[in-house]
Image (cartoon, rainbow, N blue to C red; front, side, top):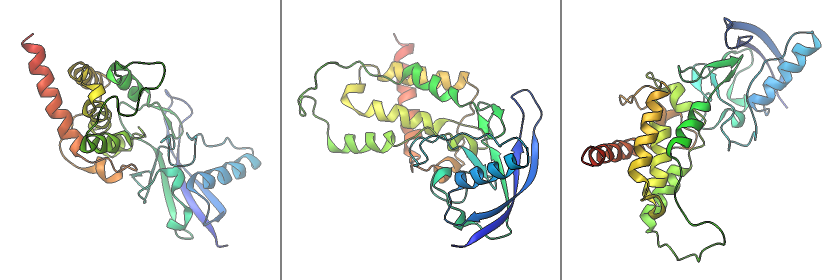
Length: 252
C-alpha cells in the first residue's frame, strides 16, 4: 500500500474567545486508503507522542450520514469530492502536498475550538417550525393517506439533507437557504404537512434571519458542495411558500 508524507496547515484555536491561526504540521506515513479523518487521527497520535495537544474536530458516524465532519479543505467545504469529509480518502492527494484545513466559516457558525464549530443554529431553525401535527400511536394502514408519487419523490429528495452546513460555509453570504429550503420543502410537500405549512415557513425563515444567516443571491456554491445533492429548486419553493404565507398572514 502506498503511503503519503504531507504538510498540513491546520487552524488551531484554544477556545471560542481566543485568537486562532494556521499551524503547520508534518503528517507522515499516511496510507492512501485512509479517510481524511483517519489521517487526522494518525496526525493526532503523532502529536501526542511529542507531548503536543491533539487537534479537535467533530465526527460521529464516519459513514457520510450525519454531517458532523464539517471541515473546509483547501478552501472547499468537505474537500475535493462529492462526499462528506469522512468519506474523502487520501488518494485524492499527492505525496508531498500541502493541505489547508479550517473550520466552516460563517458568522452563524462560531468556532468553538480548532476545527469545531457551533452549528446549533440549524437545530433552532428546525425547532421553530420543523414539525407536523399527525396522529401518533399504532401505525396507520399504508394507504390511509394517499401521497402522489411526484410529491413523495420531491419530499424524499429534500429529506436527504443531512444538515452538515457545507452550503452555509460555501456561500459568500453565509446563507442557509438551501438547508431551510430542504427542511421546509420536505414537510410542505406532503399532505401531512399542510395544516402548519404557512406557520412553519414563516417561523423557519424568520428564525434563520434572527440567527444571522445571510440571504441567497444565486451564487450556486451551496448546490455545488452539497454532499446530498439537494437541488436549488428547494430555495425557489421556499421563496414561493414564504410569499404566500406572508400574504395570508397580512390579510388575517
